[in-house]
Amino acid sequence: MRKLYVLILSVFLLALTTPASYAADNGSWSVYPVSTQIAARPYFYLSADPGQTLRDKVTVANKTGAPLTFRLYASDAYNTARDGGFAVRTVKERQLGVGAWAHPARSRVTVPAHGSVTVPFTLRVPEKAEPGDHPGALVALDERLESGDAATSSVAVQRAVGARIYLRVGGPTVPALAVEKVRISHHQPLVPGLGESGATVSYTLHNTGNVTLNPKVRLRAEGLFGRTLLSRGLTKVPSELLPGQRVRLTEPWHGAPQLDWGHVTLTASAPGTRESASTSFVALPWLMAVLAGAGIAAAVVVIRARRSGSGPWWLGAPGGSTRPWWLRVRRGRARPSVPVRASRPVRTTPSRRRSSPSARP
Image (cartoon, rainbow, N blue to C red):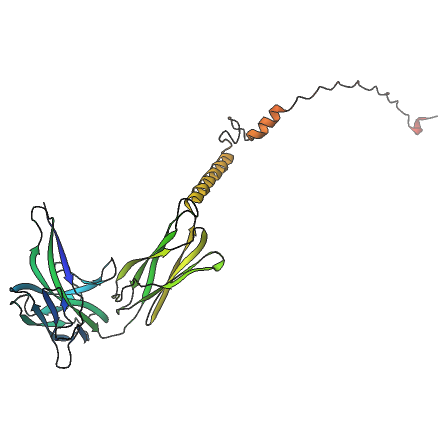
């Protein structure tokens, strides 16, 4: 059986009080920036102009009782499609930003038990680098494959820990945000009033600018005649929406109306940008929807039959008659009229030709 290899990457930042307190950590090893004399850095926050080269150091600490060997590489960051979390590319994926510009002095490092190793790295910003934010990470990857019982397990796991890099390239910054593809789906009971109703609002949040945003999203729903049905801020929104990234999100709406007509509007905002998008909806219970569908289908059949001049039995007789069946039945049951005797012709007196006055003697 072919095994499926899964990379588990830890890039979360822990806030404690020791020099390595801000390390990205998975319990076995951690990765963090070298601390300065002033304070420990929670992550690499770097600024550079196009064409500039930066130098810094990263520390890899081993918390286990045996030596560990890691593959050390730089990677680009992105938002996960599931919840918009911060994630980085794997070593086999193509790198375009920080992952292509940063280079550790050593690509592989062995860290002794309960020890640490510090590795310098350089970050060369290209001359034509676009201004704005370029997030990434320095990743320590354990290339060993971890799995359960080889005979039953079909999944092998590789673990990695990454220290985040927030690089801003000098130039104009443009915060911009878009709300795209707003959809709403209703969950209605079969019979109105017998069961709870709800809806799910889905939308895409797109960072169209060149800086990282911390967006806020508000959902508003209005019914018939402009009645406010719902108005609240959403909490399931990524705290860091990276430049160029799209995230598909959903929001449940409990207690949505069972019978209404209106629209929902999503408004996303961040410092320097604000954008809205909406979609309309028709809330209709299943039973009423079926009846309405049947009525529409019957109306279509009637219209087509009248246009073609022939139709089903309830519209008229076969052979093209468009006379309604009820009219034909009524006329068929009517009593025949009694024939009326024709009247005698009336004799008319023949007219006599009058002579003109000029013809008299």
